[in-house]
Length: 295
Ligand code: KIV
Image: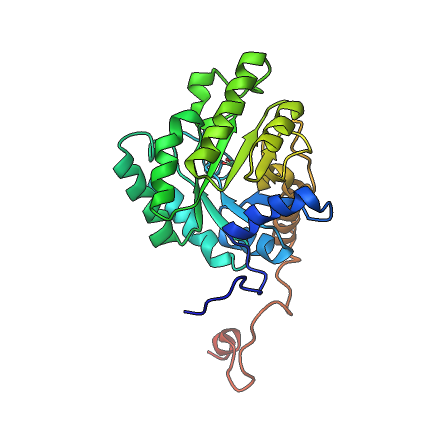
């Protein structure tokens, strides 16, 4: 084993990301943290090579890639399956996996065992769990077990039934105070970063100032230490209206539909495949057509 303070090969690590927050306080040129979700090898590889800092195998896979109505049905085995594919595509970015609903809500020992499966079987460098104060013990136990944890407060989609829908959180003084307490607890328990989802930008700003770990915002305004988006939202690959924070960087859905229509038309009008797109028999082998004519 080589002992080096920094791997020097551009690999993003948990300590690098934490250090970025402390350096940013004194140096305005420190870059914000970028994070995107990925669920398969090609997209993971493309985003890793394009330079994103964190690749998150979000449980949003349940909705955007598996067609479920919420994230709740995702199983541990499905999450592991997608995470293993993403692992093969990610070399440089930090790889984080969401623990699916039900995999950390019962016995703590079972939750630690499930998180270890993400590390041992899928090669993640951190796991993400939703919830604030009520996850204190879990986050502390995972951290003790050498598993870096990303927290997630605000709109936590796994609480959709308890919250009564997907709504912006922390809009009253009382709920804002609770989210601040949640964020502080997540930090105190040992998390290395925290996702702030769907809350007023003023509250996200306050939380970002109050904690020493990087905040990664989604629908939480521009003052967080970094941003995350669901890949399918930013690429225009979803079938509902995207939330207002989900800037669309491309319309890949339209590109795919047009390509498929063009292919179908080409097959049907005989312009695909051409002779150049066909294999040819060696010149010393007679074609079946010739043989049958000779017969
Ligand atoms: O599952 C997911 O994609 C997430 C991000 C929105 C942070 O949790």
